[in-house]
Length: 317
Image (tube, rainbow, N blue to C red; front, side):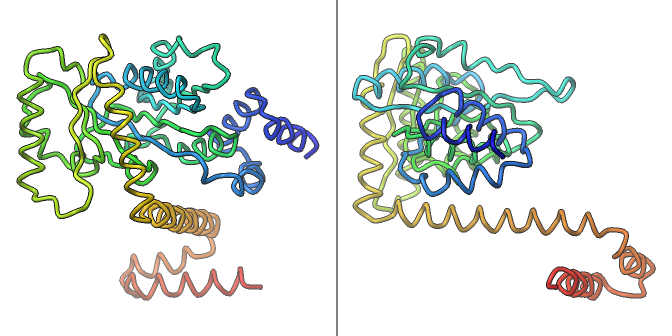
């Protein structure tokens, strides 16, 4: 307990090593997680969270690197959470995003944390949201979350970020198939990266056409920005688009509603997680009910009601 108190005192004092240790506790789901969250949660909600998502090889890490440089020039402090795929064979992850962001390695206004997915399939690690909270509470004004290269259904980032940037590239397969993907529906800003390559104008036109076809009744129409991290083209325009979206959310009072909904859903998910752990712990005691359902002496609904009744009586004492 004394060690935790010392750690949190250093955390509140702005020690980046304390932040790294707190994140390790959160990422590894150590027993002290609930105590840490109790202390840091009141200080969250100040950072603006930007999600960068897209297919593997789209240049997300290089884009994050360029955005971070521009934000630092404007005096913002930046926390970066970069999610890498975990090997299904070794269980390890090549945390390569730090290699692409070496320019910020000695900048105390930037903190970079790479995470493995550890089997999560939504483009983020299971504990990414908690790591973002730690960076938020530490005092970073912007937190950028770069997802693992995602497919059509890996949409967790929309439940975490205030602004979602979807990165596309020319020549990355059938553009129409990409446009049909569910990931396209979560974008607040579209980026056509590597725009110096042939086909950039074509995919830009196709995305604009998709937006026209959808008829966009919403007050915010996602802009389509062409960027090149090699030349720096479009990076300032991208940051401006992100800031415009932030201002739109504030003007429409949608940011508070978005974050309220996020907190509500996260709390319900945690409640379900706790409930599942309780059920697993009580498996031996409820086995007769499960066996009765398996023998078709009871239906699953009746069995579920009896299990719920048993658990409520036991844990309501």
